[in-house]
Length: 365
Image 1 (cartoon, rainbow, N blue to C red):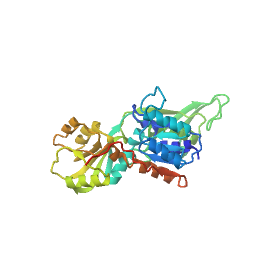
Image 2: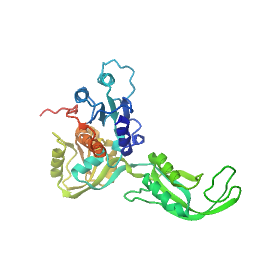
Image 3: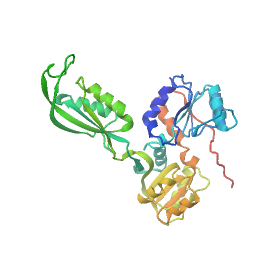
Image 4: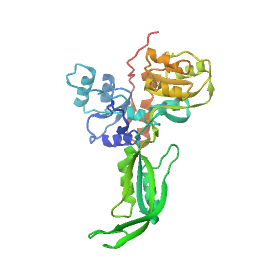
């Protein structure tokens, strides 16, 4: 199996177009047409992870955090990034990063955290805008279900937790077929009126190419009339952070102990305890201070995230419990997520999780 086959699958789950502007997800070294001898999944790429990949003969490294975040002017081995790149190239190792694009899908990094703590009724905390489009097309009445089914199968028609959503209305289309055409209905050179259905469907913008291709393929017309409109609605399945509910309230001290044990955290930095139980939870793996106000507006009892600064804790202001559970600690199970996705899709393929602890932060007790 080629490396590109694995990448294409992962990008159906976390399309590169969903990454943040500062990010650098994607194939960083290597070529997609290389035959893949095995994949090693890790949160980070370090020298030790490179050693591990070479020793177990995996030529694809899949990491959450990109090895290359900013422009490189030299590859001389004088820093960790250039040293690792040189080693990867010399050993024909492909490095692929799946970062904020995996953060920004509801079943991604934050979804994995929500699974671990048992959150229900999940919603994106900060849904993205300009991620939805609407397709309007016209089809003969007899072919409506054929066209609509093809569009749904291509990923259109999802609104929140509802699938197969569309609107249709009947009307009359007109055309005159020119010389050399092969009209499905009507005669060449004669004005024709046809009873048609106007079909409207919403779809995520990153699926535009496949939705249009599916619609055109299912249409009986030689020339297909359709419109693509950008809409301002928020996409409830794409964005930053997640909020949800525990099945029953938990005393805040007990909940923090549960989080400590689940994520193997030596210590949790948190704002002042509020003396009330925890049930509505907001969370964001990695650095999530930009979502504090959203968590408060969501009336969450607690916001779990990482990399909070001193002044960030003042934003709690008695309205929410803020808990910094550590960057590595919050995202450590991302490797399990990616491993599970690949293993389910390609059950006979050699995919492994790193045995290297890549957390750069140590604790002194």
